Image 1 (cartoon, rainbow, N blue to C red):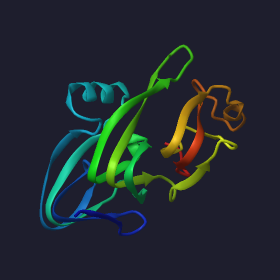
Image 2: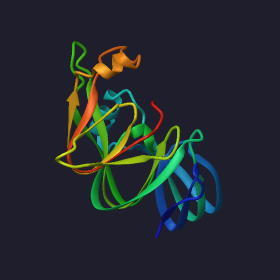
Image 3: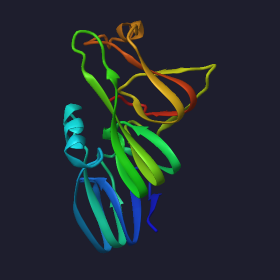
Image 4: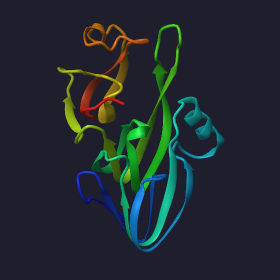
Length: 207
């Protein structure tokens, strides 16, 4: 069984025992033992359609497989790391903040709507579903976990959003006058709104 452990605030340790993990290409900083590495393609599911959806986001979620017996150390740009255990749940995650996956997990890309305005840019979210562990990255410090309840919906800056799980629905708020007030009025201003029951995790620095 593969285990992902927070070796330090900024390094994840993947313990392999004849098993495999998937991690962002270029994230391996050291390894011990008999471990092999190969490209695992896009992290948005299987096939040509997944690749098209991934390219439509303008992002690149290129994964590698690490297999064998040993320990692999993973880190990206000095960002903080958090390991989350999934037990049959679905985690919505900003693809740039996904570091590693272990266990019986399936990734896909889901369309979450249009940004609105004249541009009508499509927005996509990477989903991770199943049983296993996910290692996430956060810039500026550790992840901040915010509870969402029907009485208290949550609105977050899309540049600070990292992940969400639970019985949540996402919508877009385009009347975000606070962006102008704090000097972030460039482009089409919008925020993400979450309703329902669950947890939304954000990072203390914007992308």
